[in-house]
Image (tube, rainbow, N blue to C red; front, side):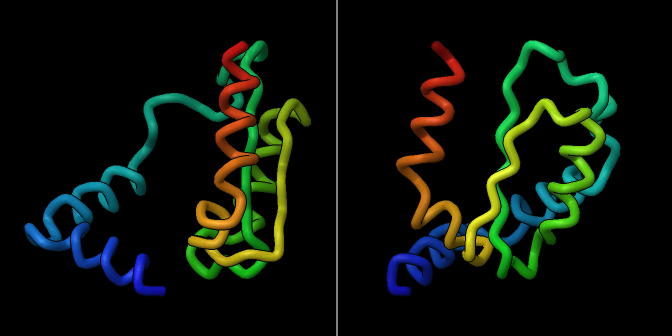
Length: 99
């Protein structure tokens, strides 16, 4: 918990403008359709069943739009828990995808 508090303190130390800008950008159209992601790219989606920020249904919908060519990982975690408790597996998946 201390690490999370320190990380949030640092994230907002210079104000909220960056976070506000990120939020606005993430809510705008991306400039491409999910269905248009190259078929040769491996896609991993990680979701926490207890995430109140990004619901699992988003991942289910994205996976469906990709036509089943994605790995949808669902763990008993919160939003932050995925990054904290599954960091090794997440990074190994990225490494393996680059081979």
